[in-house]
Image (cartoon, rainbow, N blue to C red; front, side):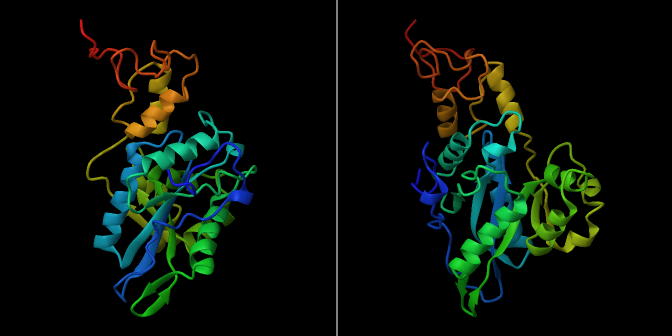
Length: 283
């Protein structure tokens, strides 16, 4: 994990620096607008679907818009959110950093997670605009410097909550969808047309991405599997499986992470493997 991406137990905002090492600083086409995708969420834990959303959005932007993706960020909500199943922000940021370690363009920004108070999504997007377009001056193009479009990346379930009365402050919805916009990935069980029905004024700034390969992995299901002492391997990245096992996360009674070798996998098994799978120890 890059030092700027992960949170040590005693890290504070005073130690924070904006992680920009994977942000492309120049595009070659004068006709395209640089785009930075921001996924805000719990990521408790991060799954392969979270990662696939970025790849789907990059493909969509390439083939269907005038945008050119120059970077993307995961931003974990802070501990003040108090959501069920939310482990400490330190763990969630570390798991996200492990998940994107091999990526050339995905980054983790711990700024939101380091705050003791809850931050609205609008404030988080403002932070990225400030860091990328104001402090760094945007991106170079053959036509001169351009500001990046900062856009929210989310599943259709989030857009559905925006259309549900009483969940979001209407002023925040207006601010986010007018000033930033959103790339929305269809999710199993969510009626995207219904979710967008009350957001018609903002549809020019909302880009809906179809899942060509259906994937309904969720953090909720991963936590459930852990509580039931079931395998989560191949549902989340392998380094994240190892981190969950090593730190006994999402294991309310301690059973799922108990093993005779102290490493969570059980004798002869890798971390996260099903205890119903055969051991590789000699019989």
